[in-house]
Each structure stands twice: as C-alpha cells, then as structure tokens.
Length: 104
Image (tube, rainbow, N blue to C red; front, top):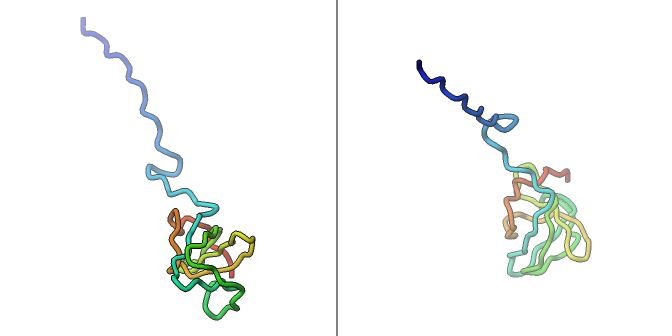
C-alpha cells in the first residue's frame, strides 16, 4: 500500500488588511532645534502666523502633530508652551510623517 501523507499545518493568515503592514502612527516625536540663531515658534503652521516665542538652538521639543505636507510641526517646549515650527530647522527622533495631521 502507498503511505498516506501527513497533513501539514496551515500557514498563518496574512496580517489583517493585507500582507504589508503600514507604519504605525506616532503620537509624539522628540525633536531638537537645529537653527543656529534659534527658531521662532508661531501660533499656526506658516510664516503669516504670529510669533509666540523663540526656541534656542539645540533645545528639545515634543512634536505632537504636523501640517498636511509635513513642513510644519505642532510642538510643545519644556515650559509647556505649544506652537508651530518649521520642520526644516528641527532634527527629530522618528519620521514626522507618522504624526497626525493637526489643524492650524
């Protein structure tokens, strides 16, 4: 007689929503100011918004959101003041595009 093959275990199903997992959204990202002369914190995402503070070079801030394009970041400084800074002048610990889009 011919031997009966043993059943093989089923392969684990692919991750829900497809095989490729998306990058999880970050709630906040630590960033450091890289502008040598400091960076203006504004009330909204753009140079037309009022300046509400100045962040010193190498100061740490926490980014909690971004503009649609990711060129402006909603941040909070060590004193607890929240505002917006240009993403061109910060070095962040993770990809800022994983932050949620915030209103301005």
